[in-house]
Length: 414
Image 1 (cartoon, rainbow, N blue to C red):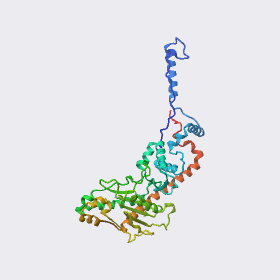
Image 2: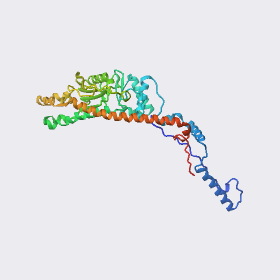
Image 3: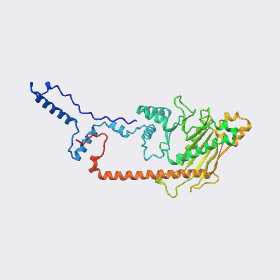
Image 4: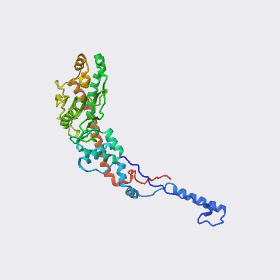
């Protein structure tokens, strides 16, 4: 819902002065000097009406005047201006609408369990109703949902997942640096194995572009996902590789996500890599916080690695937790089938190795940024509470001095 422009209070209307000959209160046949004097007097009076008036009012009268002005303002307009729209009901449909709108305004609820991964249950008809409600509320809000806010929808299961409404430093740093290491290793393939140059150069990074899958149960409602990262071979409609990073509370969701990528794409999304990181919110964090991190690797319908731990609960690297990918993980099977046996073998043998030490190092750096983010958030909250406390104590004495965008403008200059 966009912020509507505030309606300014109407300017005082000033009627043009009548001709001298028709001036009320002036005798017909008056002298020119008398007419000039009368004209000057009328012009001076008009100027006084136009110039700002000095107000010798007490603070209480100022406050009363502004309160009256606020009462004259439209409540709907005020809520639109401040972004404080009324909550919408209707179960998960209403929750979805309210969360999307709050994310658009940058004002997510403080008690939201997981702004990175929020699951809602919507049937296809409810999903269409949500889209219509967003459009009716504000076309810009609908565009935000369609084009900016990352989300997944599975019509067969009736599941809408709102993703990264407020991404954390830990999530963003881990996924970005892990993915960039993989991309860098692929880009080095032409120099290391020239025979694979044409293949490696066709593997492209498409970030978290929306992936439209085939599991639709209504013609107008499609299944789609917005992966954390993806690699797609030139000329294909779907990525061959998808990567997802999640916290421990969505471990089961990550497994379901990997299965849906493969099944709903008829196997075209052939490789899925997921990271599961134990993250403790700052308000619950202590010396005994669990720092375990693991990954799972899916090739086709097989899970090659299941929750393979590369960092233990104390934050130390686990030697057996290394990750190995092959160039064939990023190339469509139809392309591999057209290669001769030697080149296909070279593609299979070209590996990307990520040791547990490397993964843990990336995660340690992510932890540092997350700690800074948490510290900043805590300081902001403390300052806000302190400011609110001071405001409550001083409210009777300072209510007249707070700026109100809807109040009548008062100019104290002559």
